[in-house]
Length: 472
Length: 161
View 1 (cartoon, rainbow over the protein chains, first blue to last red):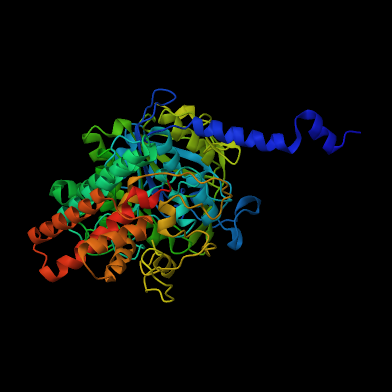
View 2 (view 1 turned 90 degrees about the horizontal axis):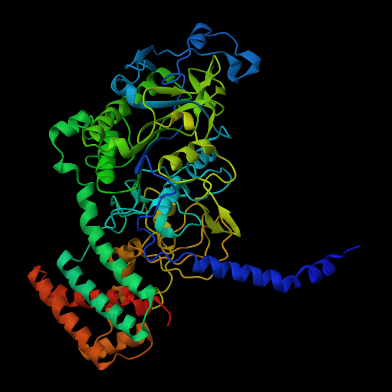
């Protein structure tokens, strides 16, 4: 019989070897990561179809059967018991109160809730067979962003920035506009075990207590001129330190970081300023339609009410993308329509319809849509069965869509069952969604890794299949 | 930063829309500790900027990054400026105050060159404030505050040799 002691003794040199192996590994890992500037543009694994990403994140779980997943049989069976004991609350089916029609040359079915967006049907790639692991907000929202629902991992935006770097050093590479405090909060745009430089920079929300749109971007006391004098002195001290230490990449890094920061605080406010946009552009995004309500004038805080706030956020997103930001996310809350579906869903859709249509139009006019990947969707969909006058959560089948960079437009990929409970064809799990996004950016989800806790970690962990059918 | 500014702990936090975020990011929060109670998904901003370990992860070895968001914190955050203000309280001749600051920040006196460099900075900063039409009584206070903040932001304060 081989004892554990003998085994360790004979196989290598016991625990000492294990410690040595770990150290040697750490050293090798360190040697293998000499990125002078961690945000410098990186080579992709293959030719990218998209160079930047905009994620329009609909927090709460928008209903698929009332928007992009046409279910005539659900409408026909309205009020009858749900089959196979599906759905709680009496399990009666609830046909969509909204009319559907075919749109564009492709004839995609889209409901009357999106009169403006449906004009762009031929740009949309509907993923009607989405599914995720859990029907609970916190877990599903985290999984949509980080791949797992148990604990935070680097967010999709952080992985993208890590994989691609950024083309504009004067701005953050990953910006998240008005992210929610709930459902994992900052974990959804965090870097987790990736270096902090890859975390999302938050615009709007203002919970840093200062009321600023972006934290630490402005100095409340020192004028720009005075700050330049001060920074020159800091750099003088730093250069003296660098000289006394000889070659030192850390001090060199610190010196260039200060110069970057100074440029960032000059450039970032310009990008945040929507005043230089024309009245026609503002109209395009539906901004003139609502003043004062929701988020305050000129603010990028959480959207509420009409399209004004979300329009401003979408316009800001375009400005950020145009300026070279790699990954932009805009969150719109309030999609958890358990009650009063008819009115509350109408109002949520109205708030995003014109802004998104305007955004797609604007991106195309500026030649940005071809290599910008636009993503839309929430953490899950909503049940085809009624919950009072609303719908409950539904994670086994729902819809997200993509547009732009490298995806086929005017395509409905996958489908749910007759009523919309479960994805049955062309199923796309959230891991597949992640793998496909990375693929479109020229990154192989199996090769984009970061060593943490002794393992080469991936966004898709050990899962994920690229959805090749939607690649344009 | 808290230690150099010679501040003791304060117990009260300011109000705000999000009491947790307001409390942990309050510039008047001068707690320092080896064991810091952390609300699981609310890492204080300063820790999240400076590679603080994510409280829900097992972290054996933290990455060390040097990035602009950290520089912006040191240049613009009220916490840093407040700490710099606290150091103004000593009086005396300019040369003595410069010397005292170097001893306090770097645990060593300034070289002759550094002494001259600091004096030159103070002069240049006052000149800029005059240009920016800052009233004279505030100039003195602002210049020393800017000087102390510069030392906080310097490499020698941030890195061990």
